[in-house]
Length: 559
Image (tube, one colour):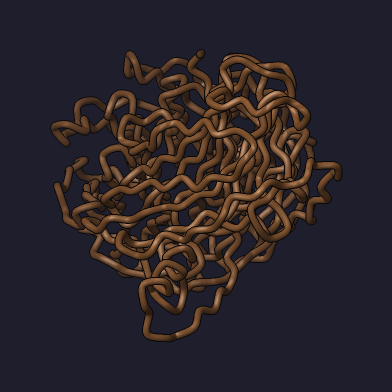
């Protein structure tokens, strides 16, 4: 089996779920915990995936040695209700599954996963080896269920607690997996292995139930189901839209996200604080002191559970451990630096800080938390984006138009030296920059109203795209799962959405007001958060579209 991973994240829609406020018994507790899993009965929407469909909120993954299997919505082979998730292939071996990380809270009931407690997931599965007319053949198409105790999303992680393989053919069985939670999130993995194809080999999943250990296990008599004869009809996918506006601190600017917990951090420049927004169905807001004055930007290292805050007025970077909720250090940069953009290269554990007034980038060693090097750049360095897949760092230089129109400096993180400077004469005054590590494309937003697309392999400009109405652009973010680019208007209170797959602008979304805003995208939940400095708010955007599957090579950056 090759080391491949088909990895496509699903839409997480912020919907309002109402739960009865009753005194919970054991069975009621199980139902409340199951609210932490969305679409566990597979009666909800399905979204397009390759040539098939995957249940909304579930993430498909493929570890197959060759061609991938197909995912479909089954309307006849199901344990109960109207539908189940089907995975199948014809005459080729395959190894694939689906996964979902639990919601942080189940709404009004406030139920959530608690570290130190044990939880059980119950999953009904059904398989057919060799097609519907083939004889019963056990232990040919095997199924199992696993739980990652801290919400990890790598299906090959050694931390996943797996059940034994189950090989029953042509009968519904319930597989139960138990684990002690190590954080406030769990990830459920449901997979099948078909090492030697018997023909039309099919795997069905239904009725996923999560509960605290000790609740009675739901039981039922396994029954046969009819042979599928109908083609499923998927429901329409929701459009990209602004979900809500949330008040934060004064003059919010830079934003970073911890993807696997859907936790966004916002630098509030006006009151020297950092807002933490933890969301899913509900959004929880907390705030803590930034440790410096006028925090302009934040960067996150999810592997070490750290955030780094650039404090413009005190010329420093403060470091926090967000798992332990404590300040680790304050790193001085020197007088007159005025740090702005900041980024983390996880492969080298190096933090890059754009010193706007000193025309340089400071390099901080993540182990010693000291400045180890300063690299001279062009005028007015702005934002920073890193690509751990290529070990490159991209820094925008706004320049002094018209004599210096600015550009993008490419730093080799292996040698910590300037690799190239990309001139942007067609797009003066670049500011925002972001990287799609899957496609190795770099996107730059310029005040001249141009979106610049750069090939990360050659570091050459592929094309320059005028924004709608030639509006000046401020900052930019990309969702690698959808290949949608979100560019903030510098002159209007809108976000423009560019679809890289079709090469055109799709939406114009209204947000709050202000300049030099921050934006961050979470590809796991399809949440995009934009800061509105003049309104002291952030806007939460839901991203979704029609995507084709893609493959990532392990290991994943996010653990």
